[in-house]
Each structure stands twice: as C-alpha cells, then as structure tokens.
Amino acid sequence: MLRRADPSPRFFPQRLSELLTRWLAHTRWQGEAQRFGGAAWQKIAARWPALADLIRERKTARARHRRELRRQAVHDVPPQPEATDALLVQLMASSSWQARAGAALSLAHHSGEVVVQALVRALRDSSVEVAVAAADALVQHPEEAATQGLLCVLQNPDGYFSPVTRVAAISALAQRLDAAQFDPVFAAVRDIDAEVSIAAAAVITERMPSSASAQLLHVLRDTSGYYLPIVRLAVANALERAGLLHAGVADELLASERDASVRRVLERASHLTGEVLLGK
Image 1 (cartoon, rainbow, N blue to C red):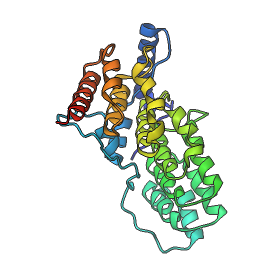
Image 2 (image 1 turned 90 degrees about the vertical axis):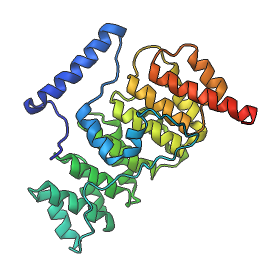
Image 3 (image 1 turned 45 degrees about the vertical axis):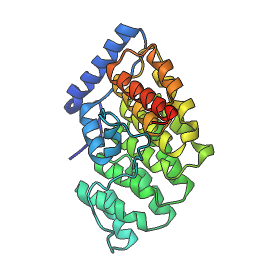
Image 4 (image 1 turned 30 degrees about the vertical axis):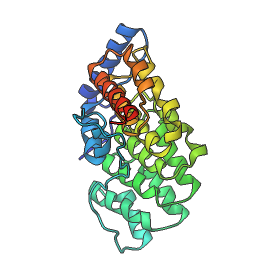
C-alpha cells in the first residue's frame, strides 16, 4: 500500500534523508536546493513511463519524442454499476484502499457537485493510490471546483501532498488548462520536489512547445545549484526530443556545462542540427 509522505515516525528515515539532502545543498551553495525521493520516483516511473524516459540517456537521439502524460490507472478497475450514493459511501467510508480507489475511478462517470466535492476531498486520502485515482477521475468533471482542487494539490500550500499525488495533479491539469491558464505549471518547474519539476517540464514541452524554451532553458543556464542533476538531465532531454535544442543554443550551453550526462545531450543536439544544416 502506497501512502503519502508525512512527518510521522514511520516515515522518519525518508524525512531525515530529505532534510540531509537539503542541508548539504545549503552547505555547498548557501541556498535552497531541490529534494528527490527515490521511493516516490519508483512509483511515479511505474505510472508515467514517459517521465522515467526523460532521465535515461539515449544512444540514438530522437529529434521529436512524444510523451504520454495521461495517468495510468492504479488498477484497471472498470466502472462500477452501483448508484452514485453507494459509490460515495464506498469512497468516504471503506476501510479498504482498493475499494476507495475503485469508487473514485467509477465516480469519473457520475456527475454532480456532490461527486466533485467528494473527489476533491479524496485527494487528501491517506492512501496515495486513492488520491491519484481521485485526480484521474476529476479530469472527467468540467466544474471549476475540480480544477481548483487539482491546483491546490500542485501548489501544495500546506506541504501535505506526496510528490506522487502532485505529479498526478499535473497530469490531470495538462488535460484541463488552456494556454492562458498555464502559469501554475510554469511555476512548478522550480518546485522544491524534483519529481514535480520533471513532470512540469514534460507537460510544457508537450502542451506548450512555443513557450518551452523560455520556460526551461533557464534550468540549464542556472548556476545557483538549486536544480538537481536529475532535473537538469530531464529538461535537456525534454527540449531535445521536442526539437528545441538547436545548434546555437546547444553550443552556448556547452561552453559552461559541467555535468557529463547533460553535455552528452547537448553534444548530440549540436551534432544532429549541424548534420541537418549540411544536408546529411
């Protein structure tokens, strides 16, 4: 059973690791740095393989690589025929996280303000599976309350939500927001959770390629040490696969890039762009 990260004693080792990472970042750079949870990333990589693909090095470049960001269901639970009231009771009161997750997924196909309110509340379920299922279900509800509930997860004002749930919220919002509403996703690039930052970069290059260079190149140019190497590699790969790392940009970045993995992406982009210009 996957649960949200919280400061309770059972999660103390993970929390201690996060604090140590941030302390080391502060010691080295005298400033805040991103944090990354291996356990959370394993769950995210299993649900969103396209995100995991962004931190893998490729021997063969792809000028364009379409990323699928639609959330995979926690379990392939088919819509249930029960009445809306029965599903709402199951979502709110069942002691089984599987039953609650199944109810959330089924409520994607039931309309009404009460349904939306229940799914928004389920975003705070103690089980990550249930919260992610609720985020997935809210995609199907056009009400503004659904959008606001997902934005609250992404922005995480009280620090409650797991990176897994927050990535689910980005995936859901990517299917709901229009170009004029994308500022929260742009802001998520600089999120303290590296997993959220990676997901934001993937969504931006997929949904908003015309804005991707302006929103993402600063990650590769940043010299403060805030962005973790895994995020910088993901951004480089996302830009390359969207066809946005042209030779001039790649060469400029290469002049100061020290990370070997990012350099290989930039060198590949520069080489391929040069071949295109020469007609090879």
